[in-house]
Length: 406
Image 1 (cartoon, rainbow, N blue to C red):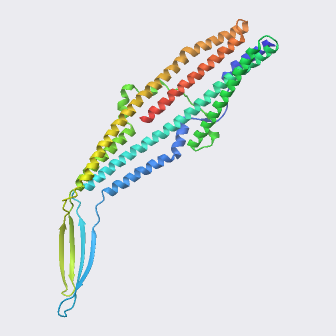
Image 2: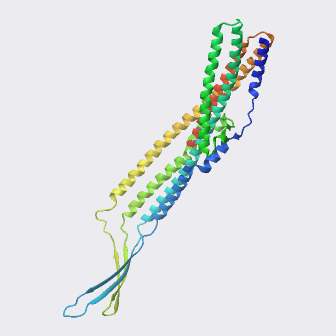
Image 3: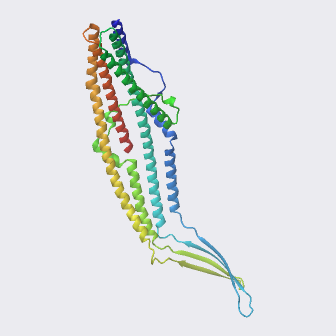
């Protein structure tokens, strides 16, 4: 009887790696495209660009002329008639200081910054979709590995029960096998709950039903070529959308300083008018120029604040650049470390375990090894696969976060 149990268990072990589930495939490219098609932050970023364009356009517009229409009359002594005087005039400020020119240039720099921020927002959304997809994929593959372990533990528990009932094993062996089986079942339940929750989150992010993301397909493991060289990190970071957007805001602040300085220069106002005397039926032309005298207000406070703002933004940009560079370096080292460990386990450890497993299977058939030794080796192999999976997932997360900064 035990020979039939061993044979059936070997069949289960050999077929465990050939299970095929025919469900709809959902790739990371599909997830990214679906998210980009409907994410509200992209629309918000696009409207932010249009908002900056409107402000830049408004900042450079010329001032409107002022139209004046006035009628005057007064009494004349000794019973003479009143004389009506009608005045029609236009006053036009002359924009000679150049303040509006620099204000428009500052607004255009704001448009550039908003455009770069919109692109950075797009990259963040892509990273969010990729992170959630690969997190779901990792939970899915982890559940598959634990299911294999549970299948083996179930066979082991059944075998130990039968041998315990026939008096071939002590009760403690059966209790240990049963405890391990229950522990892995609880682990699988927890992983499946996490996997299903991640699927629902991914479906909500993509704007589809959870059934459409039931099976995520793709390679969780990145390749070493996906990671940039450490020597090129500074150049890559200098060309990143976030860094360029910060530089654009710095340029905008510098142009605002020039605009404040130019706005301190008084702009003359040209006045042209026609005066009509109704009694004499005569017309007169009035021409005048008015200029503000900058005796007290020369934009001293606004200029000082604008210059301080430039220095503040420059210091913040430098601090943010250094912070992002340190973060990039840490992510690069962490990602390569996890990837190297996973590759070592895949190429050096796992093949040896699989070879040992095959040897024990042959020895089991010949009677040179116990079933418990075979099952223990299978369990060790599956746990190594689980460790490889976790390292690949950590390497993928580091790569996604690294690309989000670039």
